[in-house]
Amino acid sequence: MNNQTAFVINYHNRTKHSLERYARGPETIDWEDQPDQFRRFNGCNIVELPCPGKELDLLFADLYKPESIPTSPFNLANIGLLLELAFGLSAWKQFGPSRWALRCNPSSGNLHPTEAYLINTDNNLAKPGIYHYVSHDHHLERRCLFNQIIPVSGILIGLSSIHWREAWKYGERAYRYCQHDTGHALGALRYAAATLGWSIELLAEWSDDDIAHVLGLNRADDFKKMEGESPDLICRINTGANNTPVNRAALLESAQSGKWSGLAASLRAYHFYKWPVIDKVALAASKPRTQEHQWKSIQQELIIKDQSNLIPGMVRQAQDERNQRPAVRPELVEGHIQPLHKSPCTKPATAIIRQRRSAQQFDGKMPPLPTADFYRMLAAVLPSTATFDLWRWPPKIHLFIFVHRVEGLEPGLYGLPRTDEALAKLRSATLPNFAWQQVNTIADALPLYHLYSGNCRQIAKTLSCHQPIASDSAFSLAMVAEFGETIEASPWLYRRLFWESGLIGQVLYLEAEAAGVRGTGIGCYFDDSVHEILGFKDNAFQSLYHFTIGKPLEDKRLETLPPYGHLDTN
Image 1 (tube, rainbow, N blue to C red):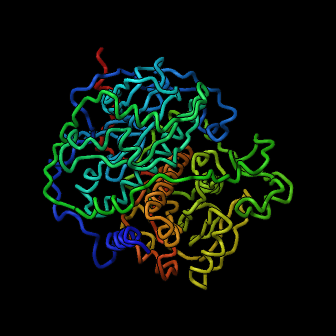
Image 2: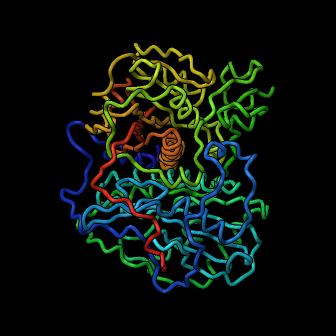
Image 3: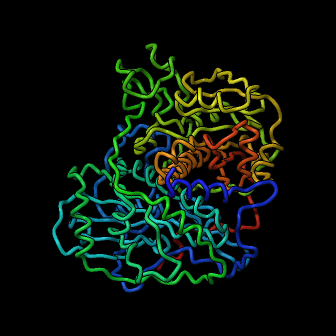
């Protein structure tokens, strides 16, 4: 184990919450000193985007059938819609004199450490260069103007994190939450692109240094001390307008020789508490350039026939070369198409995306969640669905589900291995008295296993830092990662596990909205107590994220205001 790997594992262990103590964080919080949620660069040229709020006719249920979605024109209006649906405002909430914004991409504590950049190479769209997206104003700030002609490859989106925004409230554990938020943002971008008939290509080979160089994050003098941004990822938006491969060297050279402008405005927070371990783990988990091989997901390896009556994206019939891919469940290779439940949601995809919220409390006496809705939500997080077509690596996150109120299911604990290869590992690592009996679901292909029968509401609540949202819901769950071997292979993969968890969380958020209920991500849980309940005795598996779904109770004291009413000049 090298020093970087050891440091990452040590960071993970020291930032665990326990029943005896919470991870190190601020002893007091001054809410008047909360960091500014909106980053702006002073001194940049502004590129106005068309007015936000456009609704599309495309139904949410159609997003999992990308081949049936018409490709939208590649223009500034649709680029603006992409950015709005992925990173823009979805509403304002007001209570007395206090007013705060909600966004389409969720964030721990609504602190929003994730920043989005657009890299444009097409002169027909705007002047080629690097642009920062300001969600509050729904416009672009041009940070860099390219001085040389480069191969036209459309647009790329880069994501970065301001770790201080999360650390202000959560202290040392904040680095974890920033990675969750990156995964949520990636998922939000994937859904936004799908509404336009576009797709996402994750440029996984790029190093953090490459991303920082292109986005200008390495320009230390442009940022206030302690308020800089760390590079996360970069991806290409495939619009069908141009298929020229991305020339990384040309983009790096263009950024180096380009004309940069703008200084980051202060986030206006008094940095009373310091958390140096966050900078150290960010360095230890930094990503070098890598040779990445596209993992062929199950849906790429199988022949898809009739999709009219199936859960979108679920696998149906295997090809012969089974030895060249991860194991596929036996029922998928015996020849017949699986009859799976279709979503009844008739709302436009744009409406579902904009109405996504984190529930603050649930109705503890809600009627049972319909079985079909429960199965559909679980099916949607399988790696064979269209949402995960951007994910370039084998899945490493699996679900343990505390079922409280689901029609036709005994309350208790259930497991959902997201690959067949993980099933044997999970069975071996968990308690020996777990049944691991496969559930006879509507979708026979759904790998849902019953482990234990009993009322687990109090257990779920206690494990999730005593929060009632984990017990008053229809179900809550823990996302468990294949941890030890993954981190020892390369320390930067630590971040990728959280990204995958956040991506799963974004799917659950939107699927819950489509089913008429609501979800909430839970970053606060007692790590090793979760492991003890499941039977894990070492770091082979670790719980990285919790989530819960149920019937929300609305706070009538809060007023909901339009997301961009402040831009209305009429």
